[in-house]
Length: 508
Image 1 (cartoon, helix red, strand yellow):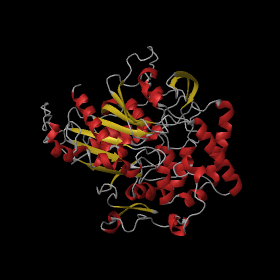
Image 2: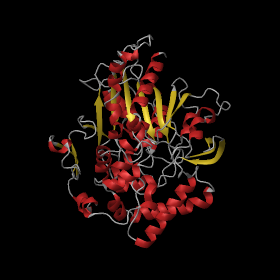
Image 3: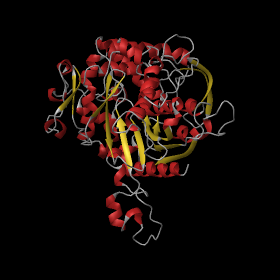
């Protein structure tokens, strides 16, 4: 994996050097830079002019754009009122002066509540089969069609004779992180974006003030639930236990936590967004802003895919009282993190040069490659099940990537060779010991080393203990025939495991 990324970066540098004014998108280009088509038809190329006007769905024939009104996100971006992928309403949460798009399904008085957190350069539509499917499964993980075929809920018919479990209802939320999907995409240097940055007030060597703490008095006046204050740490951790692709463990001499550009597009910002959304929307009553204990103990279960893992783990570290557990679906170990790059002191200057070149010159190639056929071809790398890569998926992921500011967010995120990593977070003394963690992954994922995933339970070393002592990872499940996105490739298996995890949490 590390060699393949180095190869792709080399290809990118050659492309940039030749074109001078063009760059590359990680989502659209990095996995496929070496296999681009020789030419594209004019109908398949996204016109750069589209980004200079108000944008609607790129699929004019889609039901979301043809049968529903649109919603203005900002002065340059308009989103459909309903999701093409789920047909659910696109709802808006106002957060720190920005618009955050989210979706919700399931009964208001459900037995449990789940919050889904997406991965890199995608959005809440990537959870389309969980938003629509979690309440279509019984407690044994069978779909309604399977139940009918087997003779009843839980598969009790057909000679099994086992105990039939009661069906669990789930309230399911999924949001677009700031800079992703249909959520706002402010420029990183915008004063309000700098103010909203989750890194503010988090590190010992600066005098920035946390957004939340700056308005703490006002918040506590309007809410009976006080917010936890941040604990400042060093921006660079030393001798951090991490895993290896072959299933071993190592000590990273240095792990840089702060975004090198001081961009708001970082895991700490997204962690705070997840926590505030949980408090203000998921746990809020329908009538006011008061948090109510209406489902179980009032806590929410997090389910995160890919780099959504780090944001979700950080949110649990910051505010453990909001959550009862987390299921990780194919964690991402961020091979371009400075702590992950081999011979970092020699390689990182080259990586930073590429990152700078992409930021300054990348928009032209980004636009030319942001096409349905290219996105579909690229998705075939992380997906092991190619049949599920349909037009609905491609359009749902591509449309928001064509909105104003999306390319800047892509290149900002490409430059984020820092931030927390899964083993470091899970092994931290700050991670709550009574919040179970399950890990699910596709065994055919080309981006996530299976041996490193399987070793998460061992390598999460708490500073006060030994390897595997009191680690939060309870269970790791590998899924045959699935790639990096098993929640979309084998949804019944993943949804069934989510329900099983909720059963485990009911026993706490």
